[in-house]
Image (cartoon, rainbow over all chains, first blue to last red; front, side):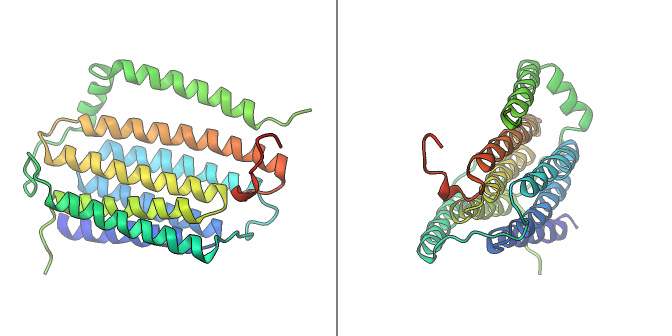
Length: 164
Length: 104
């Protein structure tokens, strides 16, 4: 059951990612990104990372993606405007990407992992345990992250304002 | 027949999504398309973190790391779009190839 779910959601993520790259229209790319983010969130559920899956859906699919669609609307006269890279640039980029995919895949498949590669350990941390870790062992990064978000909020508002 | 899913399946999927993200960053000339490529790369990294966490000792370190990656991705997207709006206000386009001056 988990295996079937993995294949379905992996296919959804991959096909949406291919759609992002293949479409020359930025709005279609953004919609395909929703498919990838949703597929990855479902993969998190398959991996028993429930908290992370929910955060992925709320922050990515609900926040970042909407921000991007706003960005698209604010930065073009028509959302259907497309810029294309030249044929030579695309050929070079595809070559590099294929080399990367093959290289990383062979590296990963030939590596000797010190842990069990086939049998997952049964004890995945629950939402409560992850939350407790965030507020005990990882309290300093957690607080630094909140300060960072404040700085980013002020910085983004400063950058995006219209100058008089 | 369905092959039993193991750690390697997740790692290969993550490698493919990473490569597609790099391809997206290299071929899009729309600045927001490049940002979408970055998000793909970060998602690929997150799949790796969570998969290693699941197939390792069962502690939640990978999950915590992934939460911070998502947080940084959101912060980065907000700042990047603010910069793109400035870019658009200056150049009246979002085509990154046009932004070739140090002082517009």
